[in-house]
Length: 148
Image (cartoon, rainbow, N blue to C red; front, top):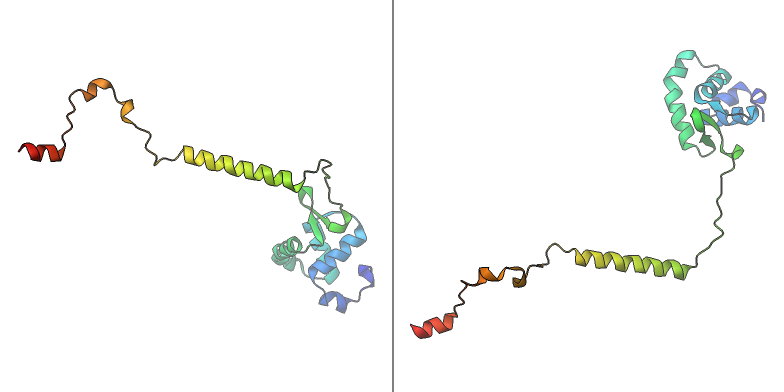
């Protein structure tokens, strides 16, 4: 379907993105958003001030419509004109290997967490110098009451 073949009444009933789709399909080339929207406005015979008011809405419309793709340097085109790059990994790992690796990582992480527990008291009496304990007297309360 060519844009020139569509009657004006039918064009006015169409959405901007549908008209942009027809334009990009006819032109078979990528376009900057300003250029594309100007062509839409020209097809609809819209005034210049409407271009400035609606360009942001047109941009939002294109970004949400899955038929369009934004390319490098701000160019837009139809998604169907571009093939996605598919990377095939020849080295496939089976599910059991992946599961075993995940369990091993989880076990390692749990072990690290318990070793670094900040509430675990690592100080022992063995850490104190011997001369600090010389003056220490241990008094058993029961023995003291018996001596009194």
